[in-house]
Length: 113
Image 1 (cartoon, rainbow, N blue to C red):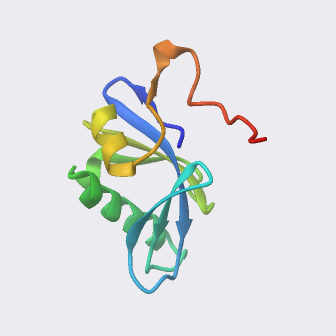
Image 2 (image 1 turned 45 degrees about the vertical axis):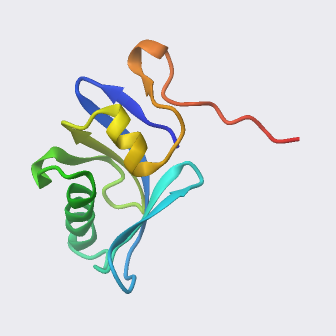
Image 3 (image 1 turned 180 degrees about the horizontal axis):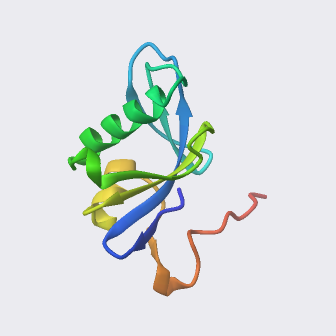
């Protein structure tokens, strides 16, 4: 998964599955954190539920979770403030974390032979 650490925050992609039987973090899938949400994608209900689930999963306040891009899409970019890269990696179980000083926004995918 592509994690970016910048200014005390971690940014990563999320793949949202709305109208699920329960709200839960499923794990990494196709380079994004897959999350099931019980709320429908109507009037921002799914986005609100997503923020609640992520705040609980990462142990931060809801105000620390921000949807940076993809407000109306199933694929979103999330920023969580006050979370270290190490904590994010442990909770997500993804690839090594990159920082802005690395010069890129994640580990490039290498085709398997």
